Image 1 (cartoon, rainbow, N blue to C red):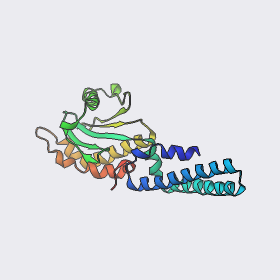
Image 2: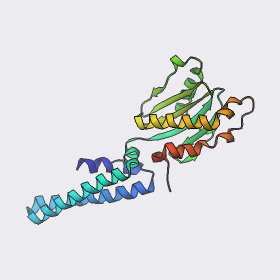
Image 3: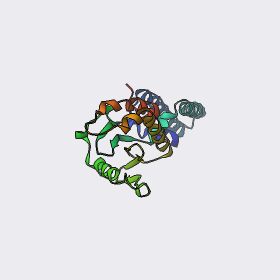
Length: 214
């Protein structure tokens, strides 16, 4: 029964509509199992025991099947990304996305905790061996990744760093660099950040479990 509780306890924070529908079904199953087991304890009627066991097994099968078919549900339940920012070494914001609202944001909306990470990005571009890649705060962590060859860095605020996010960041930066390396080389003076809007498509590709779906 613990598996049901772990799926249910973060229900309110799930942003994907399909995931919420699945969790609604699992929540109903969990409540029904508790109800039937309680009736069996009170009455000691073998019929309720058999019904309880049958529904429990069906629920366990459905849960396992759901997680196999929709692994992104487990990722969404156990991890959160809040902000995603790409900065040029000059301090110019190239792209910013808020995973909580599902919207692109501008520099004026950047919060204080993120500015701490940005300052580290800008101060660590020169000496690669001294680059800081993780800032731990009370309720979240700031992940920093640098591409010194092309003069930009990526910042994410998350609830905790894990291998899925690490791999997604590396894949994103590899493809972002491939698509924009000529633009990044020519950046000087007035910068047209609209040229980097292709980052949104890459977010959907590599961070799909965290993207809000209507």
